[in-house]
Length: 139
Image (cartoon, rainbow, N blue to C red; front, side, top):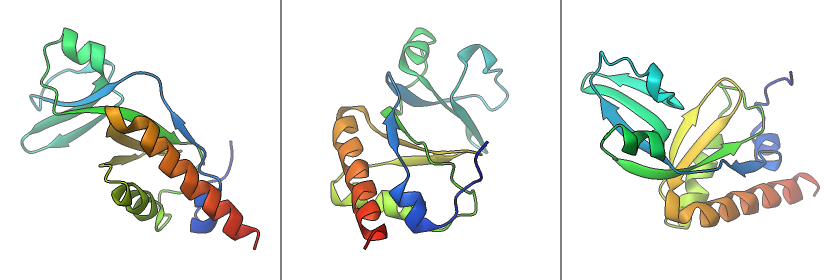
């Protein structure tokens, strides 16, 4: 297992964004719901209920409300959970392209959820950010 990276320049230069196959949705269920059958990608418990991120076919089959239909991009660099600036840099480049993003940080990688119809644009913006950072690292 690789060591987590905390240096922002190295994170950006080596983030290697990858588009995961399929469409994903953000939805909600009752806070006490057993969601194991849904096999969610992620969950987050709030006072108002449980947010679930799951593949679109499962959400539709279960009749769950679709709050946001997304493409899922993983930054494959092993990012340190205490790293400073990665989320801001990603959000800035996507903001400039008018692409909304929802970021989920996990133990090994950061995951970016963008509107499904903007997946290719978002991936191109993130690849451009990485290329610029790699170029800057060599100068």
